[in-house]
Image (cartoon, rainbow, N blue to C red; front, side, top):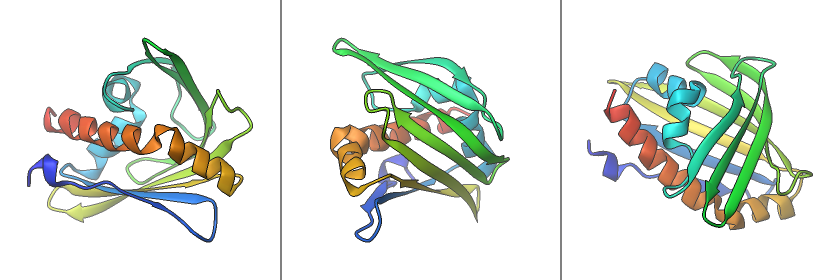
Length: 160
């Protein structure tokens, strides 16, 4: 199946301040997990096209932390968080903070499901402190960054 036919579903939960993102990839679960945990791969796909990415540190293990910066002609956008639980090929639980709004900390859970035939479903839930924080995250360009980022991830995975 062509990567162009993969759809990223982004749903804002009406009951709780949560965003659920679902995306399938034509790659084995281990490769998708590695692309989320290896900083050399992460820098090649995370975020929208047109932004440069610099990783200050990325220690993807239970108890580790990260900080990275996206930049363009308009400025820099820094993000940081802590890894609460990392289970190879299946789960990442982390916090996520945009440093431009340091009080808005989201708790994120990434679950990778083996669909067979070398395919993987990624489900990401992002729980925010409030509906206002969640809606601000969505309005701040999250959808473009997620959709374009996963398109870029398809390209990285296709290259091996």
